Length: 178
Image (cartoon, rainbow, N blue to C red):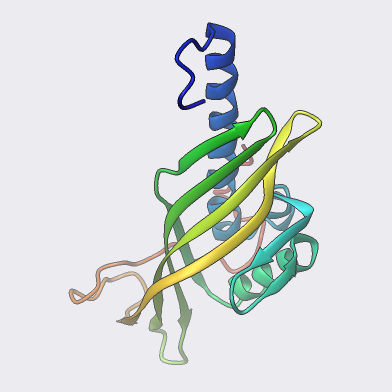
């Protein structure tokens, strides 16, 4: 932990392992949304975690079905998390801030896609319970959003070249549980 001048090798290793486990949860959060893996999404949070996304305030157990329903309405979705800033408070608690980019699009009747790109940050409290790290509290701050212009099926529009893999339901053939 920061500020400990004589940290032992074992303590340093424990800190590195804790940070690695937290980073794994954050990566799993993004990819389980994109691949519509509801069980994997739920594994990122303690069921009693306090969640505040602005449009939703409540427990993680109630949040996961809501966010997955939102994701299923988008034919294309893409989440990217930046490197997290992790502050370990003790052996079972951490504060984490992570920037994120998200894009989602729906297909119109004419076959084109249109949607929105979002930029924001996740302010998380992580807890380790029974040797597993998960999110115990999350506040999401939406910093900005930008409309994505109409996109042909897989030919990008030069004004915003971001065609995204179309995933309409869980169990996609290219999904690999990790």
